[in-house]
Image (cartoon, rainbow, N blue to C red; front, top):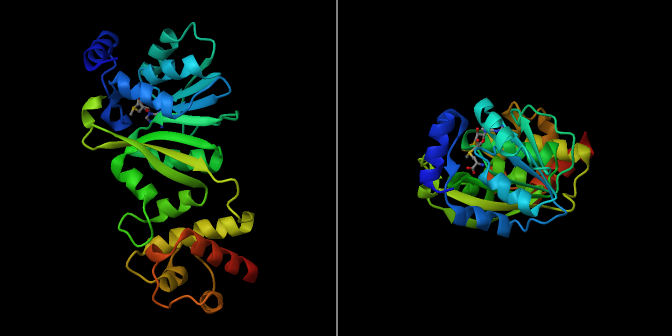
Length: 275
Ligand code: SAM
């Protein structure tokens, strides 16, 4: 739909966009086609879409995919979608908060224009709870920069490292604010996250990894050593931390923002061996 049709649809159905729910609808058919194309949707796909909104992307996905499950939090939009997709056999609509839902299914891909107010929580759900192999999402450009940044840069943080343990990511394209109605205050990027076959950590090491990453970025200006000793996310004894630093030959003054994912993994393994 273009902006005019979207506004008509909204008015006719009394679906006035709720800013708090991140309702910025895509009103550029070219972008919608591009999303479906770059995501390489095919009949083997069981796709999970979060926040179908007015259902334009959902309809395009359903044309190419085997199945689409779309989870929408808004009651008005859900009722509208139920009517719109009444005759579609391969679309399953779920009226729920995705963050609270328990979807008992295995999805090949997740493709979505995410609500920006909770996009990081949604991404972690997709990564940790559902272990989705391929994620194609529209995000606030700033957040995509955080996911894709390198050690030592200002955007490098807990999100970069925690998602980077599981996924290789890249930007597919950027989208102008004018492609949405209402227009958001920020620019957007469409990015791809491809799950790594193996993150090379066992269960205990992975838990430690998540804790030390949270700890390392808890005090950005503090050294890693201080963070690991003082942060509420890390309750390892001082001697253990000192031992890890000495075993791995880590610089006393190094900060979390300068460590690569590989180095975080080494620290996690070393801690795991000593507890
Ligand atoms: N897919 C549509 C499009 O591209 O035009 C709408 C995208 S809009 C950016 C985000 C959508 O996510 C809205 O429809 C909003 O109601 C929905 N939403 C917000 N929070 C949600 C949540 N926690 N669970 C499920 N849907 C949510």
